[in-house]
Length: 78
Image (cartoon, rainbow, N blue to C red; front, side, top):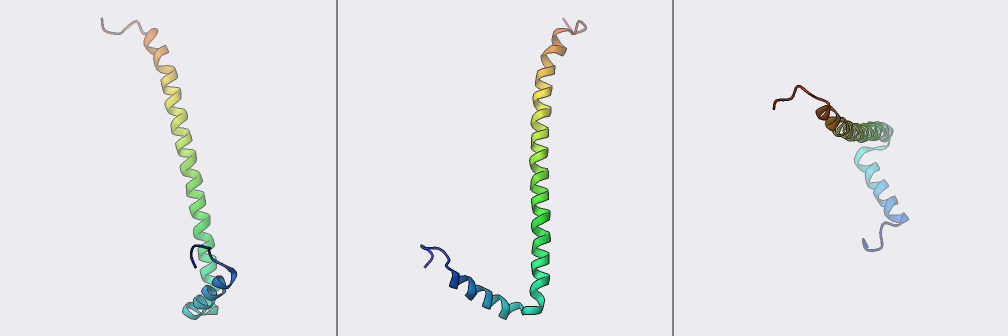
């Protein structure tokens, strides 16, 4: 059964079970909250990716400017 994947009639059975457990009036609210949760999740994942990219850019900028600052520094301890 699971080796072939879920077929159309599997989804119908799952839908019937969900209707029996939660009832038809509650389903729109569940769908709305699920949609909002997915939107928040995607937003946070996008923000996490942007934070990582900013960290990488900052590290590469620090590495690029570090040798130039030490070469021209005449006040270093000898």
